[in-house]
Image 1 (cartoon, rainbow, N blue to C red):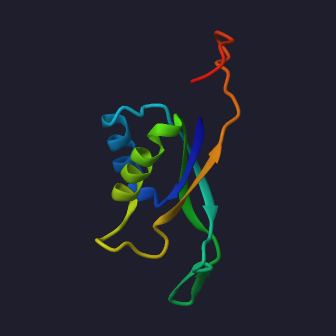
Image 2 (tube, rainbow, N blue to C red):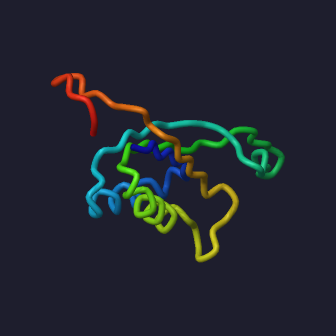
Length: 108
């Protein structure tokens, strides 16, 4: 199992979630986050925004589904054909195990 964490522009999240659902990946956790990447914030007029609003989605997927999930996120989160600074980041890490609280069952 793998945990896929994607930090995205808020306006792109709806499209990403819709496409993940259509592809058979309905299990998602979503949260509002704030942060900055390599661009170190942005300046609009005289105002400097050190941290920008983003949304993070988290999915636990089977190892063999990783590439499909990443392609879906990339395709739907990227702005324009080449993308732009601030489009986000995807992190993938191993998940040792998972438990369903209501049943006590282990695994996805």
